[in-house]
Picture 1 (cartoon, rainbow, N blue to C red):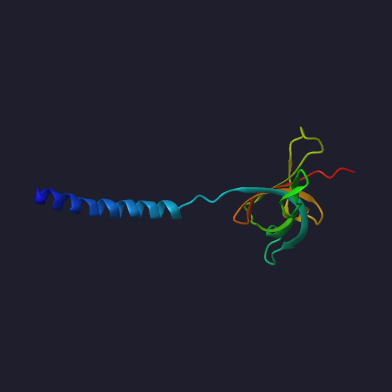
Picture 2 (tube, rainbow, N blue to C red):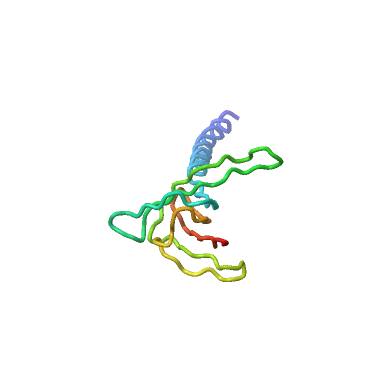
Length: 130
């Protein structure tokens, strides 16, 4: 009886260690979440060495539900890399978007940005109604 209890204890130690190790790695390896925001471009800053990259600041409007502010107006600084896909929306919703470049981004344009940790993956320049 004594040897069985001792064996169970010795088996419990590695099992507990492996379980703790698994929980620690599970907690640290969270996938980065893609976030999509829509707002107006406040600033456009190109990097000195390349005209196709830089940073933009997008201000999202505050969101209200039944006169209660759900989300405050906020400024997001987004890094635009050479891998960022930039497109211009069509005049009508059914029109396909056309390719664009970093130089097409201007102040006071409405854009939809999909980003992960502040690095833009896709920017859609929305059509401005006259």
